[in-house]
Amino acid sequence: MSGLLQLDEESLYDHIFERYTLLTSNNDSLKQDLGIVDRTVSKITIDIDQFDFNNKKSNNDFYSIEINQPITSLNSSSVNNNSTTGYVVWSTTPFFTRWLIFHSNASIFRNGGSIELIDQDDELKLPPMFSNSVGLLELGSGIAGILPVTLGNFVGSFIATDQIGILSTLKTNILENLSQLNRKIVTSRSLNLNLDVDESTLLKRSLLSLECLPLDWELFDIKDTTKLDPALLSLFKEKETIYVLAMDVIYNEYLIESFLSTIQNLKSLAFKFNVNLNCLIGIQLRSEEVTTLFLEKAIIDYEMKVYYIQDNILESSRFSIYMI
Image (tube, rainbow, N blue to C red; front, top):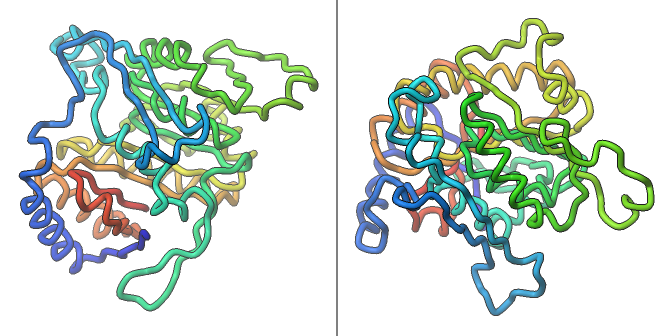
């Protein structure tokens, strides 16, 4: 079962030491790579399934996603302002998706409830993530569209965001994998889908509002909400709870400041509209210095409450998930 370890300006260093020591002890059983699933092919299949395949009960317990990768863009110095990491599939997102949907340890996040605060003799109440009253907002989606076409089955709204140069391939991949959204009727202005849905259709499956929007962390500003994208503004006006998801976006020191500024702005927006907002940030553990700097900036400079999700499945992997 998962628990939350709140980090402060002192305990973060103990946490970093212990987590990277554990990572080193597991090195023999873990892949030693940067985390790209396969940079040699232009089309890749990602399967998301049960941890115990013998418990598979229906087609709803398995997802197979076909992803187009513009691998020539990964090595280009002229596309997307030379920011090219989003053009391939990274392993953090499939790992997180499988853990969240299928593992019993993640049920507290799926269904909500009280989760143990480690070393505090206390608990924190989490709202359910899997509910039609919940919206998911993904930062740094990349081109794959894995989270929208899987987690979209369990929520009322999903907004996938990235820099504008990424969005065309992201939209293509989502459209080609709509069959994975087998629990929902999808409506979307950005994808031009089912803008007029009749009531008889909604009797069979519930509605998912799914949008792909540009969101540049360095330019994101909430001072004038009338300038925000209408779909993003509607998310904050209409949903009781929003979970922000950001998978493998912390991989160098240059992105940390603008990312945390964006999280801070989103939290301010949530406060304005009385929305319960939590952020789940998945990190592949590469540079100890980058992970430390991220935690220092979040906890010390931005004075954010940062929790480490302590979980045996996560700790036997190369990934850490933090909640802000």
